[in-house]
Length: 138
Image 1 (cartoon, one colour):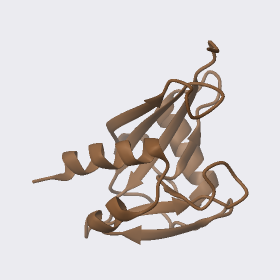
Image 2 (cartoon, one colour):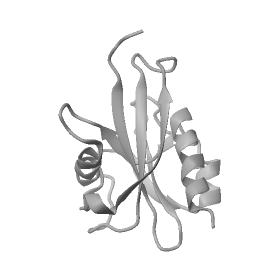
Image 3 (cartoon, helix red, strand yellow):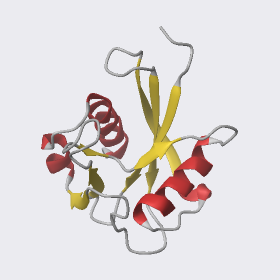
């Protein structure tokens, strides 16, 4: 197994109705056509929350204050499903500036909790969704 770990950040944008914004991966990419929480890789010497702010700006065209990002869970794959071990850190976000748009391909849409649970998602996003909704439960 490789010593290289891929660190990824994801944002669970939650609106006032407790709906979550999900991103459908472009079909030509790994896990193409599946729904995921928007985000991306953490660059070298970048802390995760700053990477998330950058990724959401690049991917969705929104501005997020790092103080509005609340860590809610993580999921990891030791390398069984990908060439390298992956760790995804999930942050819940309740406020941002701008209207989210799919700027890097794929599609975005808002889904209620029950709908998110039913979406076809990559394995790690299934784990993250369960952790998120456990935290959102009253």
